[in-house]
Image 1 (cartoon, rainbow, N blue to C red):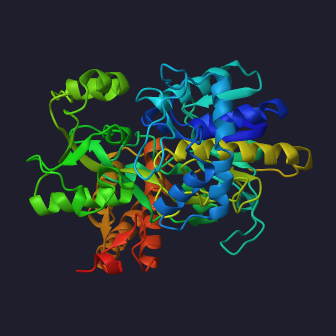
Image 2 (image 1 turned 180 degrees about the vertical axis):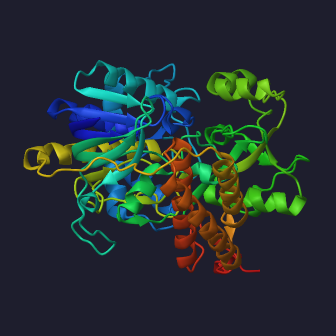
Image 3 (image 1 turned 45 degrees about the horizontal axis):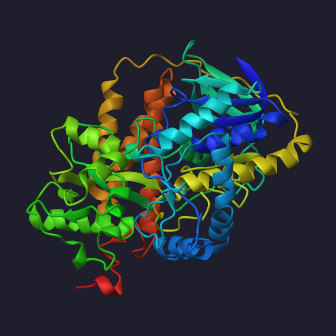
Length: 524
Protein backbone atom coordinates (compact mmCIF):
# COMPACT_ATOMS: atom_id res chain seq x y z
CA UNK A 1 0.00 0.00 0.00
CA UNK A 2 1.14 3.51 -0.84
CA UNK A 3 -0.72 6.43 0.66
CA UNK A 4 -0.40 10.19 0.11
CA UNK A 5 -1.68 12.62 2.75
CA UNK A 6 -1.17 16.24 3.70
CA UNK A 7 -0.66 15.62 7.40
CA UNK A 8 0.68 12.44 8.98
CA UNK A 9 0.38 11.96 12.75
CA UNK A 10 2.17 9.13 14.53
CA UNK A 11 0.51 8.60 17.90
CA UNK A 12 -3.03 9.01 19.27
CA UNK A 13 -2.59 10.68 22.65
CA UNK A 14 -3.38 14.28 23.54
CA UNK A 15 -0.52 15.65 21.40
CA UNK A 16 -1.43 13.78 18.21
CA UNK A 17 -5.19 14.17 18.46
CA UNK A 18 -5.08 17.90 19.26
CA UNK A 19 -2.85 18.55 16.25
CA UNK A 20 -4.99 16.38 13.96
CA UNK A 21 -8.16 18.26 14.88
CA UNK A 22 -6.54 21.63 14.22
CA UNK A 23 -5.09 20.79 10.77
CA UNK A 24 -7.95 18.61 9.49
CA UNK A 25 -9.88 21.41 7.78
CA UNK A 26 -6.78 22.26 5.73
CA UNK A 27 -6.13 18.84 4.19
CA UNK A 28 -6.20 15.08 4.49
CA UNK A 29 -4.98 13.71 7.83
CA UNK A 30 -3.80 10.18 8.62
CA UNK A 31 -3.25 9.08 12.23
CA UNK A 32 -1.06 6.00 12.63
CA UNK A 33 -1.17 4.29 16.00
CA UNK A 34 0.59 1.06 16.99
CA UNK A 35 -2.31 -0.15 19.15
CA UNK A 36 -5.92 0.93 19.61
CA UNK A 37 -6.67 4.66 19.53
CA UNK A 38 -7.40 4.91 23.24
CA UNK A 39 -4.32 2.90 24.27
CA UNK A 40 -2.10 5.87 25.14
CA UNK A 41 -0.18 7.28 28.09
CA UNK A 42 -2.70 10.14 28.11
CA UNK A 43 -5.41 7.69 29.16
CA UNK A 44 -3.31 6.69 32.18
CA UNK A 45 -2.77 10.25 33.46
CA UNK A 46 -4.49 10.60 36.83
CA UNK A 47 -3.56 13.89 38.46
CA UNK A 48 -4.51 16.62 36.05
CA UNK A 49 -3.41 19.50 33.87
CA UNK A 50 -1.84 22.66 35.27
CA UNK A 51 -3.00 26.13 34.22
CA UNK A 52 -3.52 29.54 35.77
CA UNK A 53 -7.27 30.00 36.29
CA UNK A 54 -7.89 32.28 39.28
CA UNK A 55 -6.15 34.74 41.58
CA UNK A 56 -4.04 34.71 43.72
CA UNK A 57 -2.34 32.49 41.13
CA UNK A 58 -0.53 34.19 38.26
CA UNK A 59 1.45 33.34 35.15
CA UNK A 60 4.60 34.56 36.88
CA UNK A 61 4.11 32.18 39.83
CA UNK A 62 3.58 29.22 37.49
CA UNK A 63 6.64 30.23 35.45
CA UNK A 64 8.86 30.42 38.52
CA UNK A 65 7.57 27.09 39.90
CA UNK A 66 8.39 25.45 36.56
CA UNK A 67 11.92 26.88 36.43
CA UNK A 68 12.66 25.96 40.05
CA UNK A 69 11.43 22.38 39.53
CA UNK A 70 13.53 22.17 36.34
CA UNK A 71 16.67 23.01 38.33
CA UNK A 72 17.10 26.21 36.26
CA UNK A 73 17.82 24.23 33.08
CA UNK A 74 14.51 25.26 31.49
CA UNK A 75 14.39 27.56 28.47
CA UNK A 76 12.72 30.59 30.05
CA UNK A 77 11.27 31.80 26.76
CA UNK A 78 9.60 28.42 26.21
CA UNK A 79 8.34 28.36 29.79
CA UNK A 80 6.76 31.80 29.32
CA UNK A 81 5.17 30.79 26.03
CA UNK A 82 3.69 27.63 27.54
CA UNK A 83 2.37 29.18 30.73
CA UNK A 84 0.96 32.37 29.19
CA UNK A 85 -0.90 30.32 26.56
CA UNK A 86 -2.13 27.77 29.10
CA UNK A 87 -5.51 29.25 29.94
CA UNK A 88 -6.62 29.62 26.31
CA UNK A 89 -5.67 26.03 25.50
CA UNK A 90 -7.61 24.77 28.53
CA UNK A 91 -10.67 26.77 27.49
CA UNK A 92 -10.43 25.21 24.03
CA UNK A 93 -10.29 21.72 25.55
CA UNK A 94 -13.37 22.52 27.63
CA UNK A 95 -15.13 23.79 24.52
CA UNK A 96 -14.45 20.43 22.85
CA UNK A 97 -16.27 18.77 25.75
CA UNK A 98 -13.74 17.98 28.51
CA UNK A 99 -15.33 18.13 31.95
CA UNK A 100 -13.21 19.09 34.94
CA UNK A 101 -14.38 18.89 38.55
CA UNK A 102 -16.02 21.97 40.05
CA UNK A 103 -16.86 23.12 43.56
CA UNK A 104 -20.42 23.76 44.70
CA UNK A 105 -19.95 27.44 43.81
CA UNK A 106 -19.22 26.55 40.19
CA UNK A 107 -15.50 27.35 40.22
CA UNK A 108 -13.04 24.70 39.06
CA UNK A 109 -11.90 22.53 41.96
CA UNK A 110 -8.17 23.11 41.55
CA UNK A 111 -5.64 20.78 43.20
CA UNK A 112 -2.11 21.43 44.39
CA UNK A 113 0.78 19.10 43.61
CA UNK A 114 4.47 18.88 44.42
CA UNK A 115 6.47 21.96 43.40
CA UNK A 116 3.40 24.15 42.84
CA UNK A 117 3.03 27.29 44.98
CA UNK A 118 -0.70 27.61 44.26
CA UNK A 119 -3.76 25.47 43.58
CA UNK A 120 -3.82 25.30 39.77
CA UNK A 121 -4.31 21.67 38.68
CA UNK A 122 -7.58 20.96 36.90
CA UNK A 123 -8.76 17.37 37.22
CA UNK A 124 -11.57 14.94 36.55
CA UNK A 125 -11.61 12.85 39.73
CA UNK A 126 -8.41 10.79 39.46
CA UNK A 127 -8.81 9.90 35.77
CA UNK A 128 -8.16 13.25 34.10
CA UNK A 129 -6.20 11.85 31.17
CA UNK A 130 -8.95 9.40 30.30
CA UNK A 131 -11.52 12.22 30.27
CA UNK A 132 -9.31 14.26 27.92
CA UNK A 133 -8.55 11.28 25.66
CA UNK A 134 -12.22 10.34 25.30
CA UNK A 135 -13.15 13.96 24.57
CA UNK A 136 -10.58 14.24 21.78
CA UNK A 137 -11.42 10.82 20.33
CA UNK A 138 -15.06 11.80 20.12
CA UNK A 139 -14.10 14.86 18.07
CA UNK A 140 -11.69 12.93 15.84
CA UNK A 141 -14.24 10.23 14.98
CA UNK A 142 -16.64 12.93 13.81
CA UNK A 143 -14.20 14.58 11.41
CA UNK A 144 -14.45 13.47 7.75
CA UNK A 145 -10.88 14.51 6.89
CA UNK A 146 -9.22 12.29 9.51
CA UNK A 147 -8.34 8.67 8.75
CA UNK A 148 -7.10 6.38 11.52
CA UNK A 149 -4.87 3.34 11.03
CA UNK A 150 -4.96 1.28 14.22
CA UNK A 151 -2.35 -1.43 14.94
CA UNK A 152 0.02 -0.03 12.27
CA UNK A 153 3.60 0.13 13.54
CA UNK A 154 5.78 3.01 12.33
CA UNK A 155 9.22 1.57 11.54
CA UNK A 156 11.36 4.36 10.10
CA UNK A 157 11.06 7.90 8.81
CA UNK A 158 11.59 8.44 5.08
CA UNK A 159 14.32 10.96 4.21
CA UNK A 160 16.84 11.60 1.39
CA UNK A 161 18.61 8.50 2.68
CA UNK A 162 15.93 6.42 0.97
CA UNK A 163 16.60 8.23 -2.31
CA UNK A 164 20.23 7.09 -2.25
CA UNK A 165 21.57 10.40 -0.91
CA UNK A 166 24.04 10.23 1.97
CA UNK A 167 22.65 11.58 5.24
CA UNK A 168 24.71 11.88 8.41
CA UNK A 169 24.69 13.89 11.65
CA UNK A 170 26.47 16.76 9.93
CA UNK A 171 23.83 17.02 7.18
CA UNK A 172 22.00 20.32 7.66
CA UNK A 173 19.16 19.97 5.13
CA UNK A 174 17.58 16.63 6.01
CA UNK A 175 13.94 16.42 4.91
CA UNK A 176 11.15 14.09 6.03
CA UNK A 177 8.79 12.67 3.38
CA UNK A 178 6.70 10.32 5.52
CA UNK A 179 7.12 6.93 7.15
CA UNK A 180 7.35 3.20 6.49
CA UNK A 181 4.72 1.30 8.51
CA UNK A 182 4.17 -2.36 9.29
CA UNK A 183 0.70 -3.41 8.13
CA UNK A 184 -0.90 -5.83 10.66
CA UNK A 185 -3.18 -7.38 8.03
CA UNK A 186 -0.55 -8.24 5.43
CA UNK A 187 2.66 -8.30 7.54
CA UNK A 188 4.15 -6.18 4.77
CA UNK A 189 5.72 -2.75 5.11
CA UNK A 190 3.62 0.02 3.54
CA UNK A 191 4.67 3.52 2.50
CA UNK A 192 2.85 6.63 3.74
CA UNK A 193 4.01 9.89 2.17
CA UNK A 194 3.09 13.23 3.66
CA UNK A 195 3.80 16.93 3.35
CA UNK A 196 4.16 17.22 7.11
CA UNK A 197 4.76 14.58 9.78
CA UNK A 198 4.13 14.96 13.51
CA UNK A 199 5.79 12.54 15.94
CA UNK A 200 3.57 12.16 19.01
CA UNK A 201 4.59 8.69 20.17
CA UNK A 202 4.90 9.37 23.90
CA UNK A 203 7.55 8.02 26.23
CA UNK A 204 9.85 5.06 26.75
CA UNK A 205 9.26 3.87 30.31
CA UNK A 206 9.54 0.23 29.29
CA UNK A 207 13.30 0.60 29.02
CA UNK A 208 13.13 0.03 32.82
CA UNK A 209 11.85 -2.91 34.90
CA UNK A 210 9.28 -0.90 36.84
CA UNK A 211 7.28 1.77 35.02
CA UNK A 212 3.90 3.45 35.19
CA UNK A 213 3.87 3.66 31.39
CA UNK A 214 1.63 1.38 29.29
CA UNK A 215 3.32 -1.42 27.29
CA UNK A 216 3.22 0.74 24.13
CA UNK A 217 5.73 3.23 25.60
CA UNK A 218 8.86 1.96 23.84
CA UNK A 219 10.50 5.16 22.61
CA UNK A 220 9.59 4.60 18.96
CA UNK A 221 9.50 8.26 17.94
CA UNK A 222 12.78 9.21 19.60
CA UNK A 223 14.52 6.17 18.10
CA UNK A 224 13.18 6.85 14.60
CA UNK A 225 14.32 10.46 14.66
CA UNK A 226 17.72 9.48 16.05
CA UNK A 227 18.20 6.93 13.25
CA UNK A 228 17.13 9.59 10.73
CA UNK A 229 20.00 11.73 12.11
CA UNK A 230 17.75 14.24 13.87
CA UNK A 231 18.83 16.05 17.04
CA UNK A 232 17.97 14.43 20.39
CA UNK A 233 18.75 16.07 23.72
CA UNK A 234 18.51 15.74 27.53
CA UNK A 235 17.67 12.03 27.56
CA UNK A 236 19.54 11.60 30.85
CA UNK A 237 16.66 13.29 32.67
CA UNK A 238 14.31 10.39 33.39
CA UNK A 239 11.62 11.22 35.92
CA UNK A 240 10.78 8.46 38.34
CA UNK A 241 7.35 9.01 39.84
CA UNK A 242 7.85 8.68 43.59
CA UNK A 243 4.66 6.78 44.31
CA UNK A 244 3.64 3.75 42.29
CA UNK A 245 1.68 1.03 44.04
CA UNK A 246 4.07 -1.69 45.26
CA UNK A 247 2.73 -4.79 43.56
CA UNK A 248 5.69 -6.71 42.04
CA UNK A 249 3.57 -8.96 39.82
CA UNK A 250 1.81 -6.09 38.03
CA UNK A 251 3.04 -4.29 34.91
CA UNK A 252 2.65 -1.44 34.30
CA UNK A 253 2.89 -0.29 37.89
CA UNK A 254 -0.29 1.39 39.07
CA UNK A 255 0.28 5.09 39.67
CA UNK A 256 -0.71 6.71 42.95
CA UNK A 257 -1.17 10.28 41.81
CA UNK A 258 0.76 13.13 43.38
CA UNK A 259 -2.59 14.81 43.91
CA UNK A 260 -3.15 12.44 46.83
CA UNK A 261 -0.17 14.01 48.59
CA UNK A 262 -1.51 17.41 47.62
CA UNK A 263 -4.75 16.38 49.31
CA UNK A 264 -2.87 15.66 52.54
CA UNK A 265 -1.42 12.13 52.36
CA UNK A 266 1.95 11.75 54.10
CA UNK A 267 4.97 9.63 53.19
CA UNK A 268 6.14 7.33 55.98
CA UNK A 269 8.37 4.32 56.53
CA UNK A 270 6.79 0.90 57.04
CA UNK A 271 6.89 1.45 60.82
CA UNK A 272 4.90 4.68 60.46
CA UNK A 273 7.71 7.24 60.85
CA UNK A 274 7.71 10.32 58.63
CA UNK A 275 11.01 10.94 56.82
CA UNK A 276 10.66 13.74 54.27
CA UNK A 277 11.66 16.36 56.86
CA UNK A 278 15.21 15.01 56.51
CA UNK A 279 15.32 15.89 52.82
CA UNK A 280 13.27 19.01 52.05
CA UNK A 281 11.28 21.72 53.83
CA UNK A 282 8.36 21.08 51.47
CA UNK A 283 8.06 17.58 52.94
CA UNK A 284 5.84 15.23 50.89
CA UNK A 285 5.14 18.00 48.37
CA UNK A 286 8.74 18.55 47.29
CA UNK A 287 9.43 18.19 43.53
CA UNK A 288 9.46 14.66 42.19
CA UNK A 289 13.23 14.27 41.79
CA UNK A 290 13.78 15.09 45.47
CA UNK A 291 10.98 12.84 46.71
CA UNK A 292 12.05 9.92 44.51
CA UNK A 293 15.67 10.13 45.73
CA UNK A 294 14.47 10.40 49.32
CA UNK A 295 12.36 7.26 48.99
CA UNK A 296 15.22 5.45 47.24
CA UNK A 297 17.57 6.40 50.08
CA UNK A 298 15.09 5.37 52.80
CA UNK A 299 14.65 1.96 51.17
CA UNK A 300 18.43 1.51 51.10
CA UNK A 301 18.76 2.61 54.75
CA UNK A 302 16.00 0.35 56.06
CA UNK A 303 16.38 -2.55 53.63
CA UNK A 304 12.63 -2.41 52.99
CA UNK A 305 11.15 -3.03 49.54
CA UNK A 306 8.85 -0.02 49.76
CA UNK A 307 7.73 2.97 51.82
CA UNK A 308 4.14 3.96 52.59
CA UNK A 309 1.66 6.69 51.85
CA UNK A 310 -0.64 7.37 54.78
CA UNK A 311 -4.02 9.05 54.29
CA UNK A 312 -6.07 7.38 57.04
CA UNK A 313 -6.26 10.74 58.88
CA UNK A 314 -8.17 12.30 55.97
CA UNK A 315 -11.97 12.26 55.70
CA UNK A 316 -13.09 8.92 54.31
CA UNK A 317 -15.91 10.18 52.12
CA UNK A 318 -13.74 12.92 50.59
CA UNK A 319 -10.95 10.47 49.75
CA UNK A 320 -13.38 8.11 48.03
CA UNK A 321 -15.04 11.00 46.19
CA UNK A 322 -11.81 12.56 44.90
CA UNK A 323 -9.85 9.36 44.26
CA UNK A 324 -12.34 6.62 43.32
CA UNK A 325 -9.97 4.85 40.91
CA UNK A 326 -7.16 4.62 43.48
CA UNK A 327 -9.58 3.56 46.21
CA UNK A 328 -11.03 0.78 44.05
CA UNK A 329 -7.63 -0.41 42.80
CA UNK A 330 -6.12 -0.62 46.27
CA UNK A 331 -9.23 -2.33 47.61
CA UNK A 332 -8.85 -4.97 44.87
CA UNK A 333 -5.47 -5.96 46.33
CA UNK A 334 -6.64 -5.89 49.94
CA UNK A 335 -5.76 -2.31 50.91
CA UNK A 336 -8.38 0.06 52.29
CA UNK A 337 -6.70 3.45 51.88
CA UNK A 338 -9.07 5.05 54.42
CA UNK A 339 -7.44 2.97 57.17
CA UNK A 340 -4.40 1.17 55.70
CA UNK A 341 -1.14 2.71 54.55
CA UNK A 342 -0.44 2.31 50.81
CA UNK A 343 2.86 0.58 49.92
CA UNK A 344 4.63 2.64 47.24
CA UNK A 345 7.88 2.64 45.26
CA UNK A 346 9.36 4.96 42.62
CA UNK A 347 8.77 3.92 39.00
CA UNK A 348 10.05 5.18 35.65
CA UNK A 349 7.43 7.67 34.58
CA UNK A 350 8.48 10.43 32.16
CA UNK A 351 11.31 11.44 29.83
CA UNK A 352 12.09 15.16 30.13
CA UNK A 353 14.32 15.11 27.04
CA UNK A 354 13.66 13.80 23.55
CA UNK A 355 13.42 15.15 20.01
CA UNK A 356 14.74 18.71 20.12
CA UNK A 357 12.12 21.14 18.80
CA UNK A 358 11.71 24.91 18.64
CA UNK A 359 8.80 27.09 19.79
CA UNK A 360 6.64 25.77 16.93
CA UNK A 361 7.42 22.09 17.48
CA UNK A 362 9.80 21.96 14.51
CA UNK A 363 12.56 19.36 14.74
CA UNK A 364 15.99 19.62 13.12
CA UNK A 365 14.57 17.69 10.13
CA UNK A 366 12.54 19.77 7.66
CA UNK A 367 8.76 19.13 7.67
CA UNK A 368 9.08 16.93 10.76
CA UNK A 369 7.46 18.09 14.00
CA UNK A 370 7.20 16.57 17.46
CA UNK A 371 4.91 17.18 20.42
CA UNK A 372 4.29 15.58 23.79
CA UNK A 373 6.61 13.41 25.83
CA UNK A 374 8.73 12.35 22.85
CA UNK A 375 9.75 15.99 22.30
CA UNK A 376 12.19 18.25 24.12
CA UNK A 377 10.83 21.78 24.04
CA UNK A 378 12.91 23.21 26.88
CA UNK A 379 9.89 23.48 29.20
CA UNK A 380 10.90 20.82 31.71
CA UNK A 381 14.63 21.38 32.04
CA UNK A 382 16.18 18.82 34.37
CA UNK A 383 12.89 17.84 36.04
CA UNK A 384 9.24 18.17 35.01
CA UNK A 385 6.87 20.06 37.27
CA UNK A 386 3.83 17.91 38.04
CA UNK A 387 0.88 18.22 35.60
CA UNK A 388 2.81 20.36 33.11
CA UNK A 389 3.05 17.55 30.54
CA UNK A 390 -0.54 17.51 29.27
CA UNK A 391 -0.38 21.29 29.07
CA UNK A 392 2.83 21.15 27.03
CA UNK A 393 1.15 18.82 24.53
CA UNK A 394 -1.78 21.19 24.08
CA UNK A 395 0.39 24.26 23.60
CA UNK A 396 2.93 22.80 21.19
CA UNK A 397 0.46 20.80 19.11
CA UNK A 398 -1.47 24.05 18.66
CA UNK A 399 1.71 25.92 17.67
CA UNK A 400 2.84 23.16 15.30
CA UNK A 401 -0.61 23.13 13.68
CA UNK A 402 -0.51 26.89 13.15
CA UNK A 403 2.93 26.62 11.56
CA UNK A 404 2.04 23.88 9.07
CA UNK A 405 -1.24 25.58 8.15
CA UNK A 406 0.77 28.66 7.18
CA UNK A 407 3.17 26.51 5.12
CA UNK A 408 0.85 23.96 3.50
CA UNK A 409 0.72 25.66 0.09
CA UNK A 410 4.51 25.84 -0.19
CA UNK A 411 5.21 22.10 0.23
CA UNK A 412 4.55 19.42 -2.39
CA UNK A 413 5.66 15.92 -3.44
CA UNK A 414 8.42 16.13 -6.04
CA UNK A 415 10.20 12.81 -5.59
CA UNK A 416 9.82 9.07 -6.06
CA UNK A 417 10.17 7.09 -2.86
CA UNK A 418 11.05 3.40 -3.23
CA UNK A 419 9.02 0.73 -1.49
CA UNK A 420 10.47 -1.10 1.52
CA UNK A 421 12.96 -3.78 0.56
CA UNK A 422 12.27 -7.04 2.45
CA UNK A 423 14.26 -9.30 0.14
CA UNK A 424 16.07 -12.15 1.86
CA UNK A 425 14.37 -11.72 5.25
CA UNK A 426 13.01 -14.78 7.04
CA UNK A 427 10.54 -15.29 9.88
CA UNK A 428 12.21 -15.36 13.29
CA UNK A 429 11.02 -18.55 14.95
CA UNK A 430 12.92 -18.00 18.20
CA UNK A 431 11.13 -15.21 20.02
CA UNK A 432 13.14 -16.12 23.11
CA UNK A 433 15.94 -14.09 21.51
CA UNK A 434 13.73 -11.01 21.66
CA UNK A 435 12.10 -11.57 25.05
CA UNK A 436 15.38 -12.40 26.80
CA UNK A 437 17.15 -9.39 25.28
CA UNK A 438 14.28 -7.19 26.49
CA UNK A 439 14.68 -8.53 30.04
CA UNK A 440 18.43 -7.97 29.90
CA UNK A 441 17.97 -4.40 28.68
CA UNK A 442 15.49 -3.55 31.44
CA UNK A 443 17.73 -5.13 34.07
CA UNK A 444 20.78 -3.18 32.86
CA UNK A 445 18.93 0.14 32.86
CA UNK A 446 17.26 -0.42 36.24
CA UNK A 447 20.45 -1.58 37.96
CA UNK A 448 22.91 0.95 36.56
CA UNK A 449 20.97 3.93 35.13
CA UNK A 450 18.22 4.46 37.69
CA UNK A 451 17.49 7.18 40.25
CA UNK A 452 21.12 7.28 41.49
CA UNK A 453 24.03 6.76 39.09
CA UNK A 454 27.82 6.71 38.99
CA UNK A 455 30.49 6.74 36.31
CA UNK A 456 31.26 3.08 37.00
CA UNK A 457 27.63 2.02 36.70
CA UNK A 458 27.16 3.98 33.47
CA UNK A 459 30.29 2.49 31.89
CA UNK A 460 29.14 -1.02 32.81
CA UNK A 461 25.69 -0.33 31.33
CA UNK A 462 27.23 1.06 28.14
CA UNK A 463 29.46 -1.98 27.61
CA UNK A 464 26.62 -4.46 28.15
CA UNK A 465 24.22 -2.51 25.97
CA UNK A 466 26.68 -2.56 23.08
CA UNK A 467 26.49 -6.37 23.02
CA UNK A 468 22.68 -6.29 22.98
CA UNK A 469 22.74 -3.66 20.23
CA UNK A 470 24.93 -5.75 17.92
CA UNK A 471 22.88 -8.90 18.51
CA UNK A 472 19.58 -7.10 17.90
CA UNK A 473 20.73 -5.29 14.75
CA UNK A 474 21.85 -8.61 13.31
CA UNK A 475 18.46 -10.16 14.12
CA UNK A 476 16.61 -7.13 12.71
CA UNK A 477 18.55 -7.22 9.42
CA UNK A 478 17.70 -10.88 8.82
CA UNK A 479 14.12 -11.12 10.10
CA UNK A 480 10.68 -10.46 8.70
CA UNK A 481 9.67 -7.58 10.91
CA UNK A 482 7.35 -7.82 13.90
CA UNK A 483 6.39 -5.10 16.40
CA UNK A 484 8.33 -6.86 19.18
CA UNK A 485 11.60 -6.85 17.25
CA UNK A 486 11.11 -3.19 16.35
CA UNK A 487 10.25 -2.23 19.93
CA UNK A 488 13.35 -3.96 21.26
CA UNK A 489 15.48 -2.17 18.69
CA UNK A 490 13.92 1.18 19.60
CA UNK A 491 14.36 0.69 23.34
CA UNK A 492 18.02 -0.21 22.86
CA UNK A 493 18.45 3.03 20.91
CA UNK A 494 16.76 4.91 23.75
CA UNK A 495 18.86 3.17 26.39
CA UNK A 496 22.01 4.13 24.51
CA UNK A 497 20.92 7.79 24.36
CA UNK A 498 20.11 7.88 28.09
CA UNK A 499 23.46 6.33 29.03
CA UNK A 500 25.54 8.39 26.61
CA UNK A 501 23.99 11.70 27.67
CA UNK A 502 24.28 10.76 31.35
CA UNK A 503 27.99 9.99 30.84
CA UNK A 504 28.48 13.38 29.18
CA UNK A 505 26.83 15.36 31.99
CA UNK A 506 29.60 15.92 34.52
CA UNK A 507 27.34 17.15 37.31
CA UNK A 508 24.32 16.20 39.36
CA UNK A 509 21.36 18.09 37.97
CA UNK A 510 17.67 17.51 38.59
CA UNK A 511 16.75 13.96 37.65
CA UNK A 512 20.35 13.03 36.85
CA UNK A 513 21.99 12.37 40.21
CA UNK A 514 25.53 10.99 40.19
CA UNK A 515 27.54 9.79 43.16
CA UNK A 516 30.64 11.14 41.38
CA UNK A 517 29.32 14.71 41.15
CA UNK A 518 27.49 15.50 44.41
CA UNK A 519 26.22 19.01 44.91
CA UNK A 520 28.01 20.99 47.60
CA UNK A 521 24.98 20.77 49.89
CA UNK A 522 24.86 17.00 49.48
CA UNK A 523 28.53 16.17 50.09
CA UNK A 524 29.09 14.24 53.30
